[in-house]
Image (cartoon, rainbow, N blue to C red; front, side):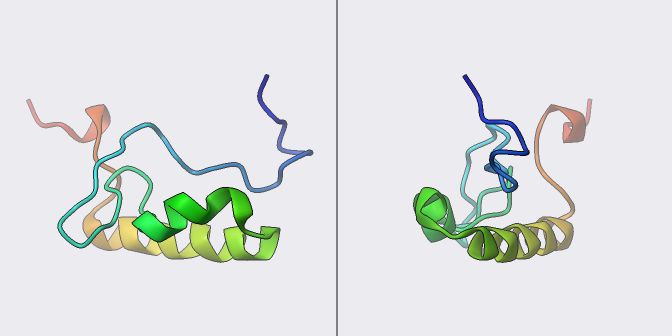
Length: 72
């Protein structure tokens, strides 16, 4: 059973595209290895900061990699 957003306002941003780039950043969710590993221990405030940083990283990388980004 998964938690609802009401129970967990910051669910993991993992989108099952778990590949780290050479800088140690996941190309799927934009989190660092340390952020991925520490997610369950972070407070809501820390999770909010991680989500903000991860989004900025993904934007800088051109967005998440995945099926929608694959060129034919």
